[in-house]
Image (cartoon, rainbow, N blue to C red):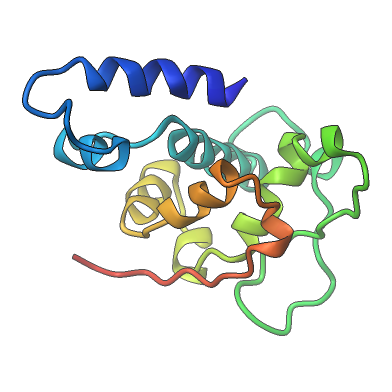
Length: 150
């Protein structure tokens, strides 16, 4: 479904003058836009933050299980459930865990949503969106994000 919506976005940007000869990624860069997959990923991370920090009426333990192994990274790591069914891997509570676990401590320990959003925008998470678009599972996309202050 995301790929279909993204194809509309791709087609629309291709019709714009002065950028129609560029690749989709180049058009997004010139137009200062994010891909729909990247926007979805960021929205997922923001909802995960709100849920875990209690900024929603959603009980976080109904969606997420805290990881008991905190040897590296931040203290809010989530347990990644094994899932053999592809449909289950697309559930919000599964697809967001690997990305969340790779966020820097400075980001996940933000005190409010606006600070979290601004810190999230300082991180280049676009290569994680490529994991989605290339059909890779995030379980095979081992990465570590770092906060780069601009």
